Image (cartoon, rainbow, N blue to C red; front, top):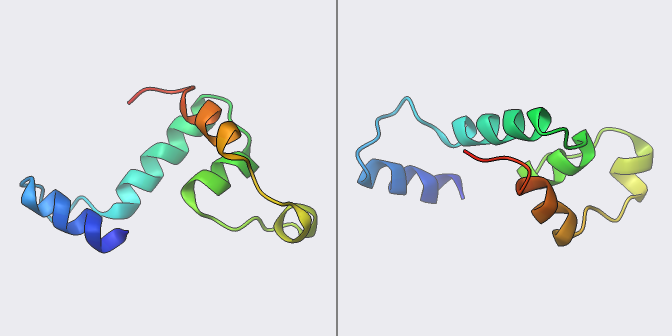
Length: 75
């Protein structure tokens, strides 16, 4: 995903200061500002959960939950 992002942003004229993690950081910030739980935000941006309860035993956030969380902010 990161390489595809790099090729796309280069083709649109963006320089090396904009990297894939810039997008991740912005989305994570917007999710927190919208009051989305850290667990749902982690699933959206692809981070592992650090606790045994959520990291090991949880089946994950449903696509409907992710869509609801994402719909809580605009960019």
